[in-house]
Length: 228
Image (tube, rainbow, N blue to C red; front, side, top):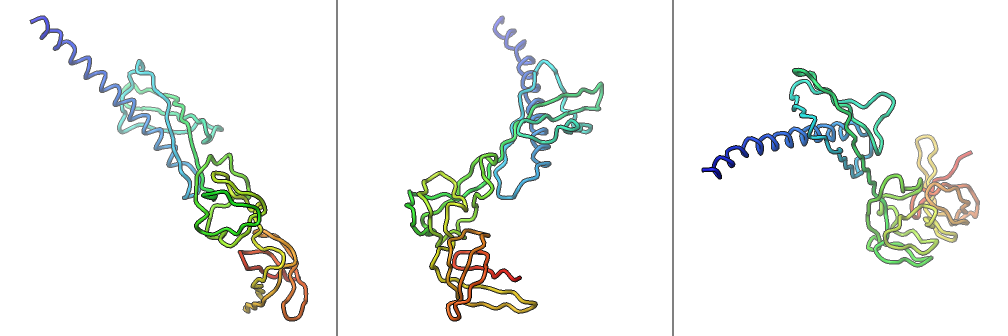
């Protein structure tokens, strides 16, 4: 009889604890969803948010209909941000909840060691992810545009490939040079007189006339003439 009585006394306590955990988890999920919906980042990024724990002694309600979420003025969304939750149901309540924000962005790396001067092929390249704050301005994210480029230094797996590490157009390479004049597009074959990476300006010479012009590297084997 005593055992049965103890069991009956424990049931309401257990149910109450479960209800409080459910309220806390719902509020944490609401804060995480709020941050996710307000992040401005690229579609290829991997985003994760993690709300902090809520003190169970607060006895908060779910506040299904009148719960507002915002970021305190002047703070904005950061790696360590704070979400302000306010309930206007019943007696109401408000809460500042810390939320961690993790954003990883893609970068191109190699599957095996690549020696200096080696030509990159599709089989040697892969995509990996790292914290966005670790990426430099010339980090490359599309392996397809690197096929045919030559490494200017040793490349190792896991390390991001940067434009400055590659010879997209190398001295002596034959290139397709494109000139856009009014509505016309003129193409010719030229030889690179300098090494260059994406966007670099290099000197090239026409294979037939030998005339030298300035060109901007646009892709492996391609450049665009810079018109005066």
